[in-house]
Length: 116
Image (cartoon, rainbow, N blue to C red):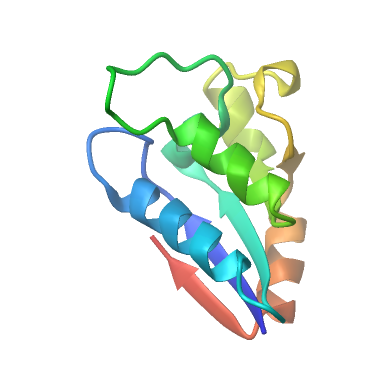
């Protein structure tokens, strides 16, 4: 099964991106599952390296890295990154600048699309 997660919300302030990343990671651990995550809008900040959060609070960048480390693909809207002043060298390992064409292809290939 090929599942695509599309995240729109900033990493902090609501828990939508957090919950999407939790679910993507859990689903990616299942045999036969392919997980792709595309961060768009304010969600691109989830993949910014070097985040400092309060002790005991989740770190969105670590969660993105864990999804990628488990074999998930993580794409980010390049236009959204540029608009927010985030360079490719500021992204966590496994997160890659992407395009709307990439998101369209991933959507067409997906068995399920979950939007957060």
